[in-house]
Amino acid sequence: MPNWFDGYTEISGSKKDLLSFLRSGVIQDGRYLNPIIKGDVLIYSKDEVPEGMYVTGTDGAFIGINSKRYKLEKNYRDNTYYFIGAWDQAWGVAISPIVEICKRYNISIVIEGVEPIVGFEHYVHISSGGEVLENVMKDYDTVDYSENEFDEWGHPVKIK
Image 1 (tube, rainbow, N blue to C red):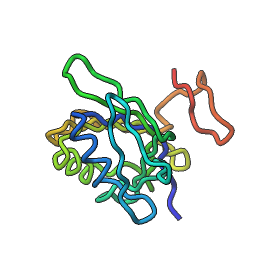
Image 2: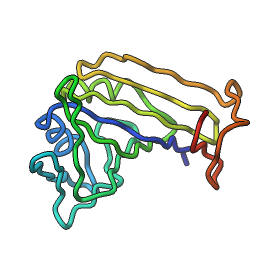
Image 3: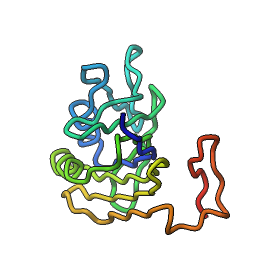
C-alpha cells in the first residue's frame, strides 16, 4: 500500500483548454465527466461529483474541487483562468507525466503538498509548454517545524 502525497493544485489556461482537460484528462469511476462553463462558472451535472478524479497518464494522481459549481478565477496579467483543488498522489509527484499533460492540454499546473510518512514537502510548477519552472523538494529533516501548526494526523497546516 502506498504512502500518499497530499496537497493542492492550481491548474490554469484558457477556458477552452481547462474544459478540454476536465472532459478528457480525468476519469471518475471509469468514465469521463462532462462539465460545462457558463460565464466564469464550471458546472457539473447532478450525477457528477468532481472529487477523486483520476488524472489519466499519471501513476495514481487524483484531483478534486469539492463542488458541482465552481467559479473559475481570472488572472488578469495573462488573461487565463484557473481553479484550485486537491491533489493526491501515491508516493509523490511524478514530473514526466505532468509535463506531457501540460503540453497536450496547453495548461499550466502548480502542485504543492506533503508526504508525511517518509517526510517531505514538494512544490512543482510546470508551464503550458511543458517546461518545468520549479521543482523543489525538502526533507522534513532539513526544515525547522517548531513554529508550525499540525492537524490531527501530523500534517503541517501552516508553515512559517
